[in-house]
Image 1 (tube, one colour):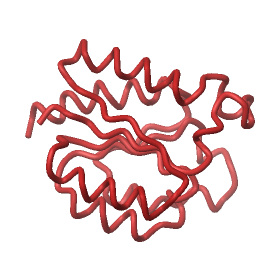
Image 2 (cartoon, rainbow, N blue to C red):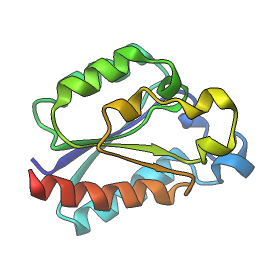
Image 3 (cartoon, helix red, strand yellow):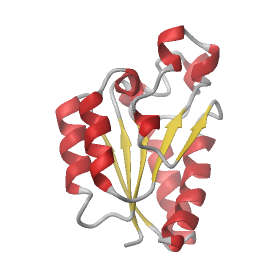
Length: 146
């Protein structure tokens, strides 16, 4: 399965306008379009989604068990709060890469803890939108190994 689910959590739909000095000026649509092009070059297919709802994210992670070879996840604030997302990720059984646009370790203390990291194969943080691209390249390698 060379299809990768790329999930984006709450408030990421506001990229480009929400605190651009922290998160950058690229919109989520621009990131998704760029990632889709990069995926083709890697022989992957990207399924790019965003939701502000924890329940929807959990549903999508559960559904990914049949049809996706890996998950790239920027869970936004749910990174630091959602045991439900952690449990769904643990049931996935394939590579998971956690992505953060900002360096969470240079921010508030509560952002230093990640439930997602407990299930993630790897974590990329602080490199802005480029983090998604790096995650996709890493995912191509991880999928080839499984």
